[in-house]
Amino acid sequence: MDTDVLICGAGPTGLVLAIDLARRGVPALLVEKADHLFPGSRGKGLQPRTQEVLHDLGILETVRAAGREYPRMLSWEGPDGTTRGREWDMMERSEPTEQTPYANGLLIGQAHFQALLHDQLRALGGEVVFGAGLAGLDQDEHAVTARFADGREVRARHLVAADGGRSTVRRLLGVALRGESVDPKPMLVADVVVAPDAFVDEEHWHVWTGGDGGALVLCPLPGAPRLFQMVAQYDDVDTVADTSPEGVRKLIAARTPVTADEIAEVVWASDFRPRAALAERFRVGRVFLAGDAAHVHSPAGAQGLNTSVQDAYNLGWKLGQVLRHGAPADLLDTYEAERRPVAADVLGISTRLHRKALLGGDSRRGNEVKQLGIGYRGGPLSVGRAGSLEAGDRAPDGVLPEGRLFDLYSGPHFTLLAIGTEAPALESELVHVHTLTAYEPYGRGLFLIRPDGYVGWAGETPRGLTGYLARVGATAGPPASAAGPSAAAVSATGAAQPVPVGPVSGPSRCGG
Image (cartoon, rainbow, N blue to C red; front, side, top):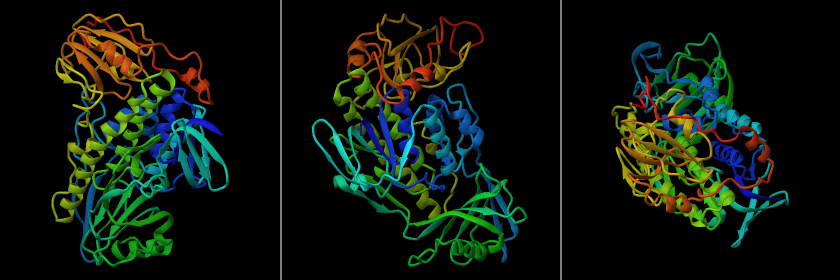
C-alpha cells in the first residue's frame, strides 16, 4: 500500500493531523498498534488556543457541547475526610472578548475527545487501521518504507510519529528523549465510575490531602454519568502502584469516604512518575516526531495534549502545501524550527507549576497555560510587521457585520487582510483577500494569515508579499485533481468560502 503520509498513532495528535490532511486532499494512512482507540483520560483539558484550532477544523461546537467548564476545587478535611473545606478555581477564569472568543479551558476526557475526532475523520472519508504495530522502517531520498508486525509494508512520502511517549518510531530512528524527573514520587491515574449514591457530587473537583500515603483527587468527566478521573500521589518514592481494579478501589476507599463497593467500574488505570523530556530532533529525513513522541510533560497545567494538537496543526498545512501545491520542500524544515522551541517553553511551564504545587505553593493556573501567547516571532516563516502586529503573532478574532474574522480564516487557505489600505491584486486561489476599513487590534496595513491562524507576513505596502507566497506555495490555484479517498470529502466540505467584508460600516468593531 502506498500513500503520501503515513501517521503512526491514533491519539489526539494523529487524529488531528489526519483530519487536517483529509480536508486538504492529501492521501494519508492513519495506523494504530492497539485494536481500539485509547480508552482512558490521560489528558482532560482543552486550552483556549486549542479550541481555536478546533474552530478551524469545524468540530468545536460538537466538542464544546460534549465538554463543560472546569468545576471548582473542593477540599475535604477531618479524620474521615467528610468535613467540607475551602473552594477555589484551579484555572483562572476570564471573560471572552472579540479578539479572544474562547477565554477559558474546556473539560473533556481524552477518550471522549478522541472519539469525536474519529467521527470527524470518518465524515471526511478517512479511517483508522487498528492492530498495525510498526516493526521497522527504512527511508531513501524519495520515500519511507514501514514494515508492520503482520508482514504488511507501506511506502509513504513522509511518516509522522504520533505514537506517544514510548514511541516506536523514535526508537527506530535512534533519536534521544532527554529531560529530567519532575517529581520522584509515583502517581496513579484512573477513570472510574462511581455509584449514584456515593459521597461525591459531579459539581466539584474533590480533593483529599490529609490521608495516609498521599493526596487523591476525583474530577467529574462529562460524557458519561458518574464518570470521574482519579489522580493519586504516593508519598513513598519506592511504592509500586497497583493498577488493577481491586487496587484502584482499595486506594480510593483508603483515602476518601467513597467505599470500594461504590466504585462501579474501573474503566482504565495507569501509573507514572512525572517527567519533562524533549526529543533532540523533531525531524529525521522524511520522518517527523509530533506530540508525546517529541515531548513528555508533567500533567500540571494541562499542556501536553494541547501542545500535541498544535504540533499536528503546524505540520498539517506545511505537508499540504508541499504535497499538493508545489511549495519548496524546505518548508517542512520550519516544523522543527517553530515547534521545538515552543515545546521547550511549555515543558518549562508545566514543570514549574508541578514543583510549585509540590512545595505547597499556590496551585492555581494563570493565563500562561491558555497558550494564547504562543507565537513564532523571529521564526523562519515570520516576515515583517504592520500596525499593532508583528509576523509570528497569533491573528486575533473580531466581529464582522456577518460572522467573524475566524470564519474568514477557517479552511486550508491563506487569508490576506487589507486594513485601512488598498488590497493588492492577487491571482492565487489559495489566498482569500478581504478589506476592512479599520480594526484596532491589527492597526493599518496588510496582514497575511497562515492556514494555522498566525500572521506569516505583514507590511504597510505589498513589497515582498509575492516572494513570501512563492516560498509557502501559495502563488497558484489548487491542483486539478486530488488522489486518495479523502478527495471527495474535501470537495464536499471544502474551504470556507470568502465572506464579503468591506469596506465595513455600522455596528461592527472591525470597521469604520
